[in-house]
Image (cartoon, rainbow, N blue to C red; front, side, top):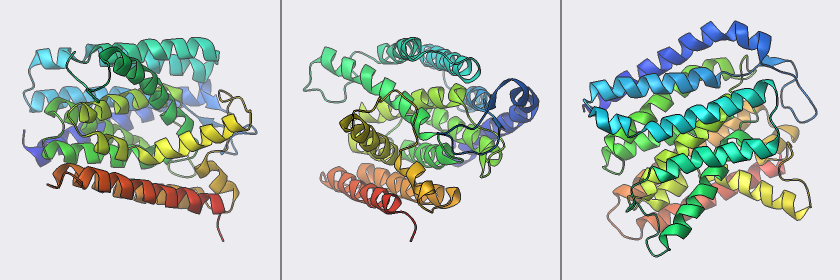
Length: 337
């Protein structure tokens, strides 16, 4: 596959499809899927949600285009049916929750089913930490996958936040394919998701005219989990941790603090670092610009962790990434001065 040209075509197909579908669906979303502000919202006026329908469909279109351009064997694409089925399942659950509100219990059960399909699709010899018992690692991946799926949903709380995360992560994954760390088929998924989210970005820029909704954030979380898992099972655990490190840190620290206070972890809230920063003087644009810049640095460190020859490079890169993310969280928590 001609790296630059064909990846650019996959990106353009996904981006154009995303834009076209959003323009087509937006009137219906404004009528049937309106997000009304409440005490936990960051927006002030009713705003259509459900733009994730276009993002998921555009990602699929980009993958099919990439498969044709790269002459990927049909059986390799067909082997992705558990991932596709799981993404459609989560998109359906998300759409139902966006419009009707589904109780937490059924949502979690369906999320475990979706992630279970993806984990079961892994080859038996695909391992992240070979020293762990096989069954224990698979169980941990199942729980971790559900966490990542919800992670993207939790962090999609202000305009452009998901864009500021997904664009650097997927661009970094494409770069890692060039270094041989990611298979071609999965690099095509990353390029397609990158294009689909880029097509959504103009509609979500502050002040957003359209939100992703759960119909988009849940399957995006699943796709990112799959792609990062492909890195980790090929021995690039540091890179797989570095790429989503800001999301992991913000959500996990926030969850830990809420549990320590005895709060209901399943109840909606606005106590993430990025949300508190907007209450402490930062504009939405200032917050997402900082997150985007840090995510670019994390993507660069992930590439260094794979490309550098020293066996210490992954550890050093991960340490630097942790320090950078910690600095950003402290900066956001202090507020604007």
